[in-house]
Image (cartoon, rainbow, N blue to C red):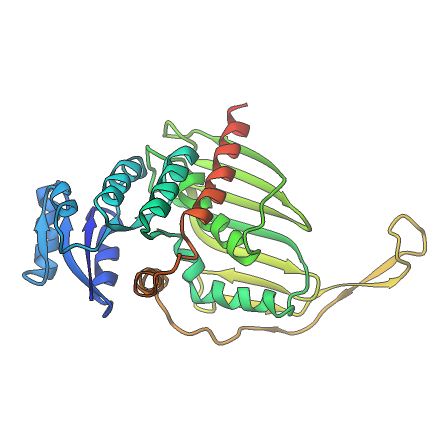
Length: 328
């Protein structure tokens, strides 16, 4: 069993701790947070089943700790991750991986040099619905992807160290990256607005990939909570609505060309095709548990994570370019 220590027991840390604790391949060795009230909260849950430590540097020097899980603000990821790698620890880190592309590349190179594993929690690619969508695409059931439309909105939680795009759109970008086997966009445009925050609280991001386009809306200032993605294929179209009980609906709908092949000629005509709508069976699984279990499997089998630094770097390239667009 691998010993893993968690740094950060604030907003997301308790969820990470619970899923590490429930994983039979891992042992939650220590919970670390510099705030005493957070450690007291952790103690009220786990009592004597783990250790508690306010100073994360003591975890790095502990030979019994095999891996470090980092659940602090994005601005703290790089320094803690680098120290952990230099101490010989594998790392699990919340998204976004780092604050800059340069930092991400340095950590990737360091991990490769030291033979250590980095797993970035791009949680949505471990969601059972996304796994099903990937299967539908790979088997050709959807046909060629025409466009992807994603929206991730709610009122709050407004963060000062990252924008809504870095906090929310990174989920959808990781899904697109996963579904398309790491395709990179060749064009992008981004519009954002800084509302109640030094960074953008509302962002509209448009990306053009070879063969399809994607539009991602991220907002901390919406009256509605939305977690929705539409993937339109040439054969079938799907809607993933994470806020609904029936999360995935498949639409056997599309457009058929009935005459002509060149859209510029008068004999070109199309017909709308209406078919069945159904929701496939999706097993009830916790995406965060799946993510942590994948990390455990990677350590056990000495393999790279599918959401490792390479994927994170592809996403950071998009985020930094989008920031440049907005700053123009």
